[in-house]
Image (cartoon, rainbow, N blue to C red; front, top):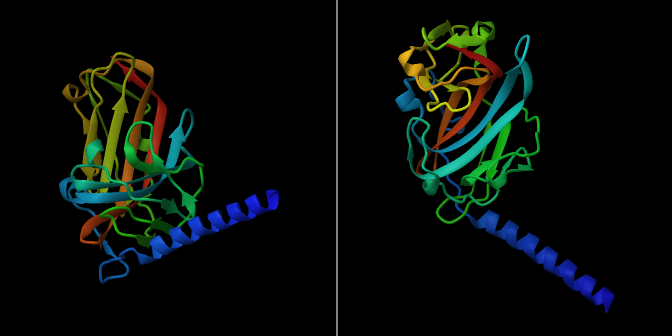
Length: 260
């Protein structure tokens, strides 16, 4: 009897595997005529950040003391039923894509906050080219894309300040960047802060500036947070939708001092 049950279980497992392969193989696959895609360098944020799906893998550099050091990758994948503009999506518009993988690593298909926001939870150190595979679900077609576009280069991380003064604001040079489409800046203040200053900046800009009024609502702290993300966006048209395959650099300081 045990042998019969084992045999039945093996056949069931094989059937499920074959069914998945069949579904994956039969789904529609569409890409644009240019196999290399179309790069969109150095454009204004409103253009650079308009798309319906994002597949992103960033190199992360962190700083607590001393200089910025590499600490891993940050990944994200999501598909919206509505156009995503200026990096803002509505959680209820995110769609099920089925199984999503990057370089054969399966992504978690739901976060604890937002359904159908996919990311890697294994800490894998992905290397170029980044091979994305989506099994598809519902109206979203099966597709795959190998993104061999390197992230931007940035040689001015030493210019990123360790502290700011709320009364005067701050600015620093971001030049030393090449191949950048979009820069994102985010600041998190001390306990009780009522604002989270952030900006989208064109990749060609040479300065990051926040005025004192733009910092209102931040509370002082010796353990603030600043994130500067330099993105290189690479677009493909898949199944009639604009898809953004992104590489980038993210510089994070979680001991950022915010002074009066």
